[in-house]
Amino acid sequence: MNHGTGLARRSTKIRPVATAAVTAACVIALLAGCATASVGAAPDPVPATATATATPAPVRPLQIIDSSCDRFVAVESLEAVAGSGLVAGAYAHVDPIATVQMPAAVGSAGGFSCSWSDAETGAVRVSLTVVPDAVEADDRIIAEFAAQGGTTATPHERTLHTGCIYDYCEVEGFSGTTAVNLYIYDMPWDGSGTVDQPQLIALRDEISDHLGAVPPLEPLPALSAEWGNGPTSCDEMLAPEALAAALSVDAAAYDVGYAYEESNGWDVALLTAGGFTCRYRGDGAFGGRITVLPDTAAALATIPSGGELTTIDVPGADGAGLVRCWSNGEPFEAGTGLCTVHVPVRGAWVSVLSATSGTAAEPIRAEAASVAAAIVIALG
Image 1: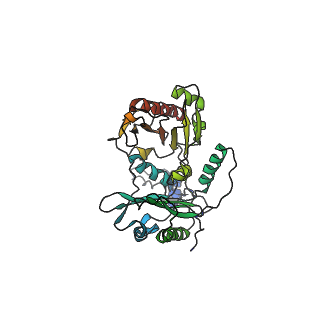
Image 2: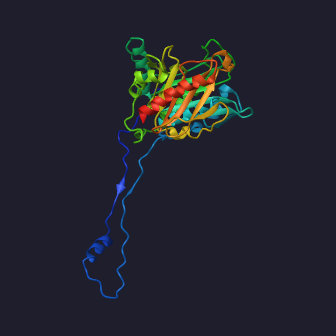
Image 3: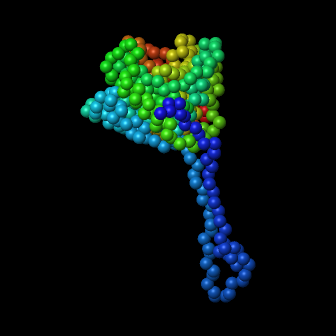
């Protein structure tokens, strides 16, 4: 059993394959065009012209790991930790946006994601994301946090570790160059965080062995021409001065936006997919967040409005967007309300979380919408 085995990409590139053949009939037809046809004779039949055919270039999302959730980890192994009655399905989350956004990011990064639910209640008990070739993304996250603290990032060993804390257990980290995030929810409460169940370790070993058996991977295709050489950071996309104008403040700034340990694999998926994120602020603290995920606007369009989700039209966007306002289970009057605006622009899925909270949804919604409108102009 090899827990350090990684998934290496093949060095060869994917290229469209075009073939064209000139047949003997074509040559004869060309020569025959110089001869004079007899009066009253039927014209010679025109041979079909051979046309070049090309294999379409691959586009994202493109799963480059030849596996699936049920092949990747046996349900019996999960039930040994979580209990019986699990049913595999598509990735799911209590947040209807995250239910679509996470698989969009993971899929665009070449990986896959899924969930296992309780067969009786339908509650999600296990979630899994697998992102190949995620070391570069992890390095970027570490480097940006180090720069934020005024230090230099130091090399570290990437491992696939296990653990349980509070009411969940995890198999998280890296197997070689592949990022794995498996979470098991609604476990018996344990605040110590120090207990490693033997079954959980066996689950980790099973995952590592499966990754070790995966053949070398093809490279991910380039991002679309629509996104092109788009920005790779918030300040490159929208200057702080333009952000300040959108917030109607004198000055604004950006900061590191990763959730990192709490990201459930989101951060490395986002960066590997060619996206980026940041926190931003106006007059207050770094409470807002901007996220850009290229080539996934089509995924955003699949989410219906209703309930917490309302539609929004931002001038210049590719289509209608969505707004989600919530207050952490409390009434908005408690002052904890937040809003996130999601808009499609230049083929990307752009999300803006309001920088401030409040007691009413409309001013918070307007703040996030104003920042989203500035980004639409910047990317247009």
